[in-house]
Length: 92
Image: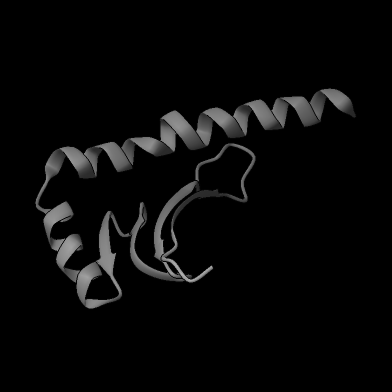
């Protein structure tokens, strides 16, 4: 209870049936505060604390890391959204 808490929440957001407006957001959280975030709409990391700004600069200077995060729209978001949508549509 008196220790440190780190978590990472990735989420996919969309409102269209064809997933054309899909957005991938990856939050890095320390002690309940987001300190760095990747947003596919922005296309890069944004830091919200001194450590987050430092890490965002490092991550943004790594093309492989940015490509990996951007690829999550297809490999993680759209893939799972298609599975969920078909499961729901098949039940109606």
